[in-house]
Structure formats: structure tokens, C-alpha cells
Image (cartoon, one colour):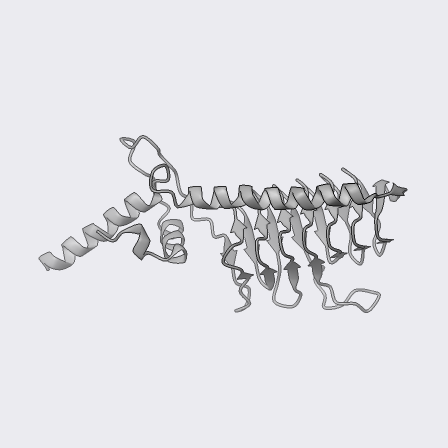
Length: 241
């Protein structure tokens, strides 16, 4: 039997996803596996994912996407790059549950800038937000359900409130809070809030590490058990032949 330590994480996840397996009910911990693919190349443009980043099992990252060190993409999130535009996610930035990040289907915006998405370091993109062909500076906080339309720029240390909608090509200066639909300036952001967001991003990274380790934990995770059993069956068949 091939031990988990001898398997690369990529090979393990690829084979389990491909087979769509279900652990026998006799096991104390049972997991059902779908054929979901976390990483999907588009026309040979595959996502780049740093080794210490985290992508939840049911999230998906496609096309020209770069996840830098310690970034995380949480449950149900979609980071939908293509073969023309780039989506970059910075150091210690977290993309929370059910967020959608995408690019408009053209190489350039009306203002002449590329239709890319750029998200800086230490940002939190909260649950259900939608970002399209925009630029988010470092240490920004995008609220739950907020919509950042194409061409928008959110500069360093700014916040877009829950449910706010930024009209296309809106620019938010550094250290401001905007809210509403369409979103408007509310107040300035102070340094204490930026410090809090920084610590929050660091804490989310610690949580992401725990989730990542749990996916490959031999005590509570069970995916490796059935994968090893299949390898053993194949080896037995080969030996008999």
C-alpha cells in the first residue's frame, strides 16, 4: 500500500476528484467526493497557486489567475479568469465564501486599461461579493454582497460596505468608507481600523492552514484510505496477471 506521505497532494486530489468516490459506510468518518475540479486551465492558461495558499474543496479557480503566498479562496467562491485577462490575488488576502471574481469579455476597458482584476495584499473580500475587472489596493475590506463594477479602483485602506454597489469606473481614494447604491463617500477610515483588518487577514490565514491540514489529516480525513485501497487492488491484479 502506498502511504500518503509518498503521494503528492496534487496527485491525490486529482485522482480522488476524477474517481468521484464514496468511502464505505463502515468507516467512522465518511466523505463523499464529487468530480469537482478546483483548478481549471483555459486554453492552456492554468492558474498559478503558491504552495502555502488554500483553495476550499468546492471553490474553483480558472484560467489566468495568480494566488500569491498565503492567499485563500474559501467555500463556494469562484475566481473566473480566462485566457486573455489576469486575476491576481495578493499576499495574505482572503476570498471568502461564495465570492465571484471575473473579467469582462474584452481585452481592454473603455478607459483603455486592461480588463484585469488586481487585489492587493492583506485584503478581505467578504462573503457573496462580486468583483469585475477592477483594482483593489492593499489592506482593503470589501463587504458582504458588495458589487465592484468594471473599471473601479479602491485605493489603500478603504472599505466598501455590505451590499454597496460601485458604479462602473468609480474611484475610491485611500482610507475612505463608501456605502449605498450607488455607493457614496461616508467617512474617513482611521489607522486603528486598518490595523484591525491586518490582524484579521493574518487570523484568517491561520484558519486556512487548519482547513488545509484537515483535508489531508490521516486521523479524521478518509480520502487517502480508499485511494490506497484502489492502488492495492490494482497492484494485486497486475501481480496475478
